[in-house]
Image (cartoon, rainbow, N blue to C red; front, side):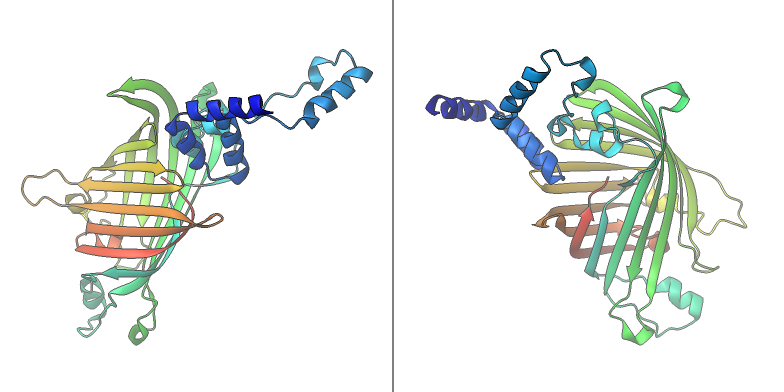
Length: 343
């Protein structure tokens, strides 16, 4: 027993910090424990070999179809692989709901400059005032519609849907309405890649089509359609996604926000870093103009609270926190809870 303990201790010391942190970032409890067992070199229970030995007495030569393949090691799957099912071990098949972007509730969110202008212009009420403290809710999921597009194992077709609502929950003077809700259906063709660039591994190229609107009537209506290409890279616990887009033109009569690209730009960059069960993300947008330069930065932090429930903190600074605010700059800070993480 002493020799066995010494062997396990030596194996645990030999395991790299990256391996341990890779296990701690796995959300499912069973998979996370299995990963810890692998890294620590923990032996399987002694009862298992005895059971096999007993079976071998009655069946000395088991047939090949009785041998079960060892389940895939979740510790070997990266964040991007689990999110987009890039490796064969990560694939779960079609028509299952998965998280897309973060799913969270921020019961308290403060803005230093609420955007009253669109509502005053629409309702002709100069005394209409938005509360600087409100609530925000986001629900987002995706479904794999087809696995192996065009007979190619590296290409999958996804459908995503995201709803983000901004709720004046504490503003009794205007009956606590939902100030703004944005709807984002999208279609994504995910193509798995494998190449090295600047120390990063290129994991995927996503080709997508995205519609975003707030479903409001004329005066408050905002919408636009885009096609994009997203390039995903990773290095250890860091994932970086670069997404340039092109706005699909609309006629002047139907365009509610013809200058939206002057504020939201032509693409974004998302970086996600995981350390243990904590996740940190940075979103950047910019219109890349030397004059009238505009953009936005969003910072998110999720951390464990209890079981699968996580704390969630968000900071935003810039233009376009919501569609109705696309040409309005503000800073906001909110905190709440998150049930599932996304990209």
